[in-house]
Amino acid sequence: MGRWEPDAAGRLARAALELYSERGFDQTTALDIAERAGVTERTFFRHFADKREVLFDGSSALLNAVVASIAAAPEASKPLDVMGQAMQSGTALLEERRDHARLRAVAIAAHPSLQERELLKMSTLGEASAEALRARGVPSPAAELAADAGVAVFGRGFEAWIAPGETRTLAECIGDALAELRRLTA
Amino acid sequence: MGRWEPDAAGRLARAALELYSERGFDQTTALDIAERAGVTERTFFRHFADKREVLFDGSSALLNAVVASIAAAPEASKPLDVMGQAMQSGTALLEERRDHARLRAVAIAAHPSLQERELLKMSTLGEASAEALRARGVPSPAAELAADAGVAVFGRGFEAWIAPGETRTLAECIGDALAELRRLTA
Figure 1: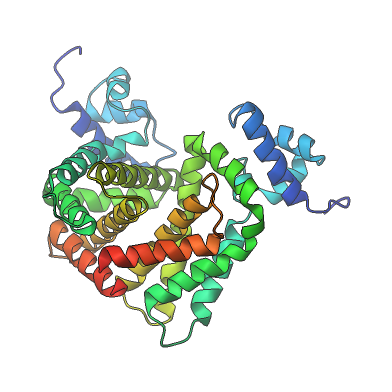
Figure 2: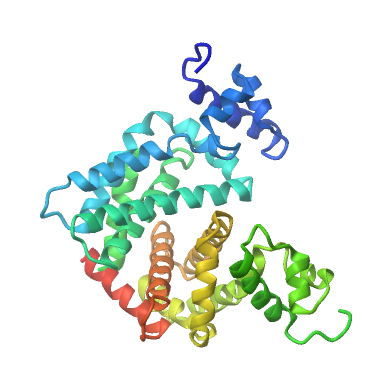
């Protein structure tokens, strides 16, 4: 690392979101983002592989929290309970950032290429969750279906959480989505 | 349309799959695919927006079958039963093409850009299903969660169906995945 750049990744993520909102994803370069954040283009690429990735700064932290929670769940827990708990455990990173999450969702919805990257992140979260469930001895396809259900519950809970006027926490929105899924399949 | 080109879309899809398998996605151009299929590049772009889209030839037919099935379900049917039936109704287009589906899955797994496009198609199927459920009077978020569950059951059923040595039909694989999901949430 060169000169001191406190929270360069966070500043780059905020700068990217501002620029995508102001002028659009296609009209923004990695250099533009770096300049807005007050760092060099080289620093941008030290943190992010491309200008899509910069909006998904927190996704590996979320995935790690979810996988760790699945691994640490009590042995007797049922797969869907394990997934519900794991998805809620990942929310601590997000609860304080609802306004940022709203702006980010608008930017992603505006560009198919960003939607695709988001879907890939959610799919990766699902596959990692399924693997962590199999490592606990949950057989296929129960492991994969429980993981998919967990990701769906996270996604729909997140959607509710960023809706205008919503006051529940993200963890509550996810818990309510899981309860709704149970009612549907009963 | 210019000269007579029987099933140009089907021939282009088969040619693309051959070329992606032989030399890889990045090393194949739309012109290469058109030449292999015996049509012009112009014909390629009359049928497909880009060289990713050519592998997703059947996705709008699947979506239409699913949405039509949701709309036609008996009024008293529960959302998840409606989704299970709808997902199975889309399989008629696929049952005879298991070997093609296997080759296609290998080609998609080999390239992140194709994985992203597949995820976008599945997401589109989920959103269209949720909309069709809401049109039946299913409230949010039950409609969205039932749609997500249906898409997960389709995806995991499809995965099982193309596994080596699998003899169940796609409709059976989907039915078994739905039964497994019900056991998980019970």
